[in-house]
Amino acid sequence: MMFFHRPFPSSCVRWLSACGAALLVAACASPTSPTSPVSAARPAAAAAAPVKVKVFVAAMFEIGQNTGDRAGEFQHWYERYWKGAAPMAVPGALQPVYCNADGVCGAVLGMGKVNSSSSMQAILLNPQFDFSQAYYVISGVAGTPPARGTIGEVSWATWLVDYDLGHRWAPEENKPGEPTFMPRKGYEEYRRFKLNPDLVGWAMKLSSDTPLKDSDSARKYRLRYPDAAARRAPFVATGTHMTGDTFFHGPGMSKQAQYIARLYGADDYVITEMEAAAITLVIKRTHGTDRVMSLRGAVNFDQGSPKESTLQHLDPAPGETAGGFAETVENIALVGTRVVDHIVANWPQWQAGVPKP
Image (cartoon, rainbow, N blue to C red):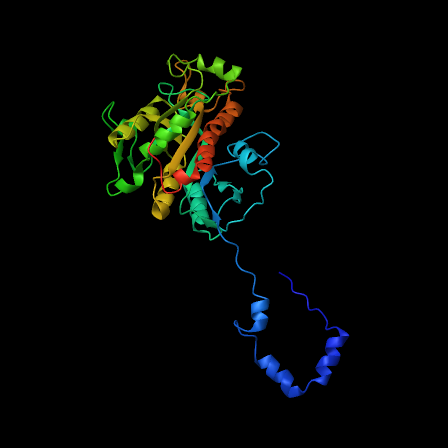
């Protein structure tokens, strides 16, 4: 910041010349006290009161701008709640936070556990915000096993499970067909989170009948899979969201994810994503998890069709992708805004905690 010294007006110079040196020294040596009339008449600018956050929406990435171009995870939320809102910079966070007058705030946190959780930590601890009564929607795109979901579906998490906290080894170094994963002892409180069943119940009650978008390319792509769930039109569902820093692919990795979910006593694994468990751990340490929601939309299957290899699925040829991305990110916001709007509109019933469904 640059400071500029303003010259004294000529009247002040004449006044100073007329004053005795002792008076000038006394004036310089006696700064105005906080209780003096001058201080009372002209108080220092008070710090702005923190924003009382009612709902915080966390996205992981945006493709370009927040509005006006191809939408990523944040754009539909931004256009709904924060178009024209001033960005609020937060040291340590990847992107600024936006808030509206109703107490709905949101930000892009970054992809992956470390990226997203460090941003969330910085935002939660920033004095610009009061999160003491806040609800959270961790929102983004994801993959799904074809036996459990389909392209364009939207899922509310019942459980969040960490895919990475454990021991793994190569399949050829194990007995054929045996799992190649063993949990890491001592990490029980870090690797799984059961989300508030009452809050999940509310989310489904408010959003399960949301009309969802679909695309011709997604409809065509689904027919590659024989699974009934994979061939369904988009729907709203619940289940375990598996958080891992690895984009795992193939039936073997999908089977391992389901094994871990069951090993930890969670519901069926239905969504693979990269951030929610880590973000939730940060929120847990500051405010608990009773008000946390994880909302994901499936833009791909976690394995190829029976007629393609895992490598072909991982690196598809041009024109062989699933499609439906634009419709899915819109579906996420269509579903999520129903819950956000209800909480804000009925804040007196929600501010003290989740009402019984």
